[in-house]
Image (cartoon, rainbow, N blue to C red; front, side, top):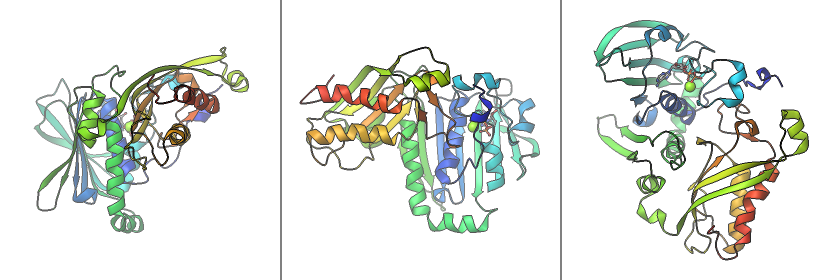
Length: 358
Ligand code: ADP
Ligand code: MG
C-alpha cells in the first residue's frame, strides 16, 4: 500500500530526552564512531553533542533547519527499508523553534582540519556561516536555552529538571548498550559529561566502543551487573497473522526473528525488582517494547518471585514486519503479528525448566 500516510507528523521534541535523542541519532546516521554529550547545568543552560561523523557539506547548510529537508531518504518507496534513524527532516527544524539559539560547527573530509560555525535562527534559516575554527571531521551541535522561546514550558522544564535529567541519562544508556555482536557497524564510543556552572566536569557514562556488549554493560553498570548473565542467540519462527500478511502483501506464513544480547539466567538468585536494566532494540534501534518486556518478566516471575532479569536484547526482524512511524519519536514501534511474536519469544524460556540457558 501507499507509504505516504505512514509518515507521522507531529511534535518531535517534547522534552530533554527527546532533544538529545535526535542529536545522538543524527550523529549515528552520520556514521560517527565517537559521540560526546555535554550537559551544561544539567541541560538547562546548554546541551552539546560532538561527533566524528561525516560532517555537513556546504550545499546542505541552508536546509539543515528547514522542515522536511533531509539528506537521508531518497524516495518514499524506500520508507519500509529505511536504515537511518532520521528521515523526516523534522528534528532540527523543531529544535530551532524550541531553543534560544542553535550553533553547529561542522567539518567534512574536504574541509578538515577547519570547520565552519553555523548559527541557525528560530525559523531554521542560517543566520551566519562565516566563522571558521579548527575542527577535525565531524559535527558539534549546541542547543542553547532549550524551551526559552516558550516561557511556560521553560518554567516547567526548570521545575522538573531533577526528573528530566536522569530520564535523559537512561535514554543515553540505551544507546551505549546497543547489542554490538550483530551490528554491522563497529561499536560507538559514547561519553556523557556534565559541566557545572563553575566549569567542573563530571563523567556520567563512558563506553570504550570496543564493540563488546559485555564491556558496555560493565561501563554502564559496573562488573557486578554481569553476574549470572547469559549470552542469548536465538532464532524464532513467528507465524504471520494472515490478515496482516494480506494487507501488507506478504507471501509468507512465518518469519524468522533473531534475538541476540544478554539476559540473566532465571536460576540467578539476586535479580532486581525494577526494570531499570532492561533495554530492547529492533534492528539495533532502541525502542519501547512494553509488551515484550512484560512477557519476558512474566516467565521469570514463574521461576522466581519478585525478580526481573537484566535484559539487553536486540530483535532482528525483516523491515516489512515493523512500522517505525507510529510515534513521532520513533521509540514506539508497531510489530505486525505482535501476539505471535510474544508467544514465540516465551517458548524457549518456558521449555527449559530451570533456566533459560538456550
Ligand atoms: P533527519 O535526521 O530526519 O534527516 P534532522 O532535522 O534530524 O532530519 O537533520 C537535518 C539534516 O541535518 C540531516 O538530514 C543531515 O543532513 C544534517 N545533520 C544533522 N545533524 C548532523 C550530524 N551530526 N552530522 C551530519 N549531518 C547532520
Ligand atoms: Mg535526525
